[in-house]
Length: 218
Length: 218
Image 1 (cartoon, rainbow over the protein chains, first blue to last red):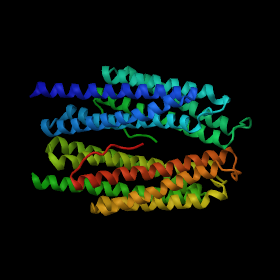
Image 2 (image 1 turned 180 degrees about the vertical axis):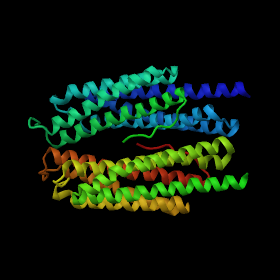
Image 3 (image 1 turned 90 degrees about the vertical axis):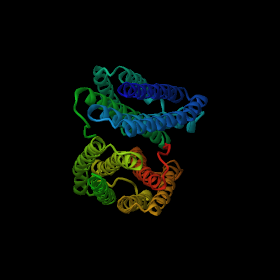
Image 4 (image 1 turned 135 degrees about the vertical axis):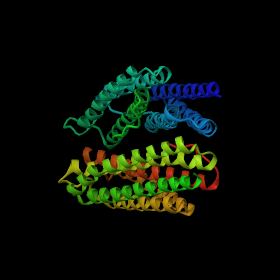
């Protein structure tokens, strides 16, 4: 019984890593679609989000099944409950990648943002890809040092997010309303993507350090 | 044991209703702050979000405690797991109200959006308040007809959300970049607020009808 249980926890973890890898792939392709205005890559991202959603639901069913059959307590219980929350956050990260891809598709064949913001969004995209890859690694290894790295990457994303508004609201901004809407939304999606990663990283960290649910920020 | 368990489930439900009522109050005040550019109401909303966050964490702890002590199965298990998800969505709804209040505070003493969009945002705000009140009622009564109403209200919010972009990207739009950013963000926050309510309504519906976790949209 105990051994089976450990195997099941292992499977939960492996499935979370699998979903995190798909999310990393999604944000990588969404960023490419956004940067290169590639509508076929964008459509690929949008189509593959369904897989992430389904895997998240299947994982939830497995977790609930484990709760019902094994009635875990103490740390084991928290691991299973955490998995439910991590899957919800991963699912939202997939949605953010999809939203970024949708922006690229809406504006095709135009580029999504004007030249003056391209390097900012390129960096945001790279950072989000890096964060997603680190997140998969964190879920695989449970190495809390990676959680710290993710939090640092998120700080940089937050700075870039603010810099987008500085630019859009600054005197030199020449973009039209469409550019302003796109920049606002794209920046928000990148920032939320990283926020979800931080929220997952905190859960892994708290589980490792024995503490529990942190109060979430905004 | 069984009786205690039913009492505990009852308490979980009551606490969800309590949080939902606070969320309804928050969005009502956020909408007022936004519409009337009232910075002191805005600050009240922002300050009281901490209470919602804390109540959500306490509810999560109660739910996990019930899982550990009672090891519920079947529908009871799903009720408790649902409560964890509902509390997470309510917490996010509180964040959306806070974001709307923050927009009002940033732009003070200016109004947040230009005249041409005020009636649209007034309607979005009213609908979100209505949705939040219905949500508290749904959680209290478990009457699934209310869930249907919430989904209809959300459809209207989605229409209004699209109409904001039509206006902002239309030829008659005279707003500057600041107006465009504010309208984009405010509309997104209202839409997300309603989305979270729908997500909760679906969970209540599925619990009542015996089905379970729906695949979430975007």
